[in-house]
Image (cartoon, rainbow, N blue to C red; front, side, top):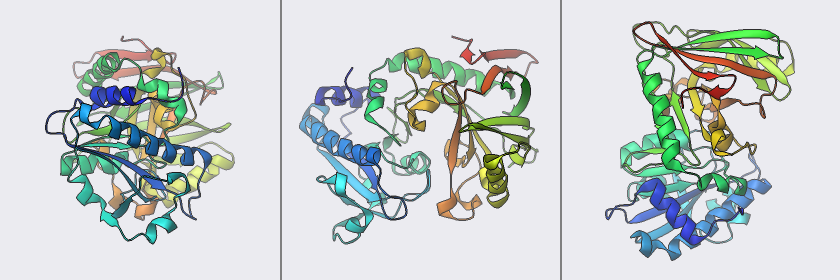
Length: 384
């Protein structure tokens, strides 16, 4: 497989992911651009070039897709993953590799992003910073559908060619089981000897399948995709969340150990530079301490491996996120953070390549009838 995708493959991808209808007339690509606060990187520059290339190739086959237009909207980056989009952007379709926020700011053809989104039906967003949270909310509001692709790199192109029919079957099977369950327990071993257990409250929640297909207006999610996710109950109702236990997370070479109570990280039990930083972080930004997502990626069984970018790597196995959850059906949103720039939804991924010191021994669901179902053992799924 090569690391490029041709016009016919892009057409097939749009057909597979979005199932275009005669009502679909406009496709929009969106990319964010660097500034002095968040400087450019080689991969970011490559991604903008990729978006420009895809825009041209999709424009060449727009008639075959039944579309009237394919356009590329650029906008200032918002400095944080899953923060709300800025108010404005600019249609720019050439020289994207050299584009910056300063250059956008002096252009006289600004457009309101929400006005643009209100008129399109299909969106592809290969951005530097994740737009998944705001896109989920905006898609429901303006009735478009979107594939968010934060951090996409050419190394991920093989993941656009897999059997998303089978991916959908698997993630929907997990969705059915976690929706039925009342709780989920994960048992970890760290460094081959230390055992940690954490219990997650799944009452009042439903699972969501993200299988890389968005055929229905109002839907948005990641591409490449291949996960089921569910937000643990956060205690926003009359009942207190029962999520509690001890959660290990590997950050670089250090394993940070969090004590979880009422679905929040309330204390860091480990010692080390990164542990101290995390302890300060949950103190300074309590919304970050929220357990925002339990995710179950399935793409490892399709022969894919990590590429060092969350967009794909989280789809390879179990992941647990901190921070914002309202875009996934939870209660914690922008209002709960100290400022819009502080908003974050960050995934911690449990696969050997990214967290070699942590073993996922068992993932077990507890059902309303008192029964249990093991869905993972020794890091592998047991229900397919």
